[in-house]
Image (cartoon, rainbow, N blue to C red; front, top):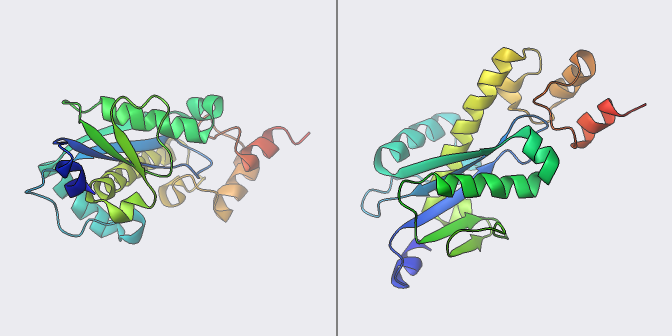
Length: 198
């Protein structure tokens, strides 16, 4: 996909992906990565198909050879906008954070953000089809995991250090026993039902 884009005259191509649409807690995080075609780390793949150790190793390599930017959308923005729009907001923020704006972006998914600031193409299963999107998926995953580890220290008992905010059995039980934190997404069903069950 990157070679095809270069054949069309684009030179700075960013891969964009997000993580954290499904969890009950924490932000949604996106990354934009511009790879150097001459220094692509070997082994790039969908972050979900890699071990934690492989993700850490590749993340380190990506940060050394590529231009990387991270964007987040907060829990409040997720509740205000809905998770899809908040994901797109995080993507736009990631793109805006690059020091030099790319002239083209490959975006994981089947639709582009409404206010996309440059020419772009959506790529279904992009993290398996584009090295740039793969790199973005890895960087975003590592970054969001670090955010959830930090939040887990502030709010022990929910297991965020292992479930990363997803609705695991232990997380649901902790919600019932400990209640809802400011980092829980109020419009997500298990949290919503707990807050408004009466």
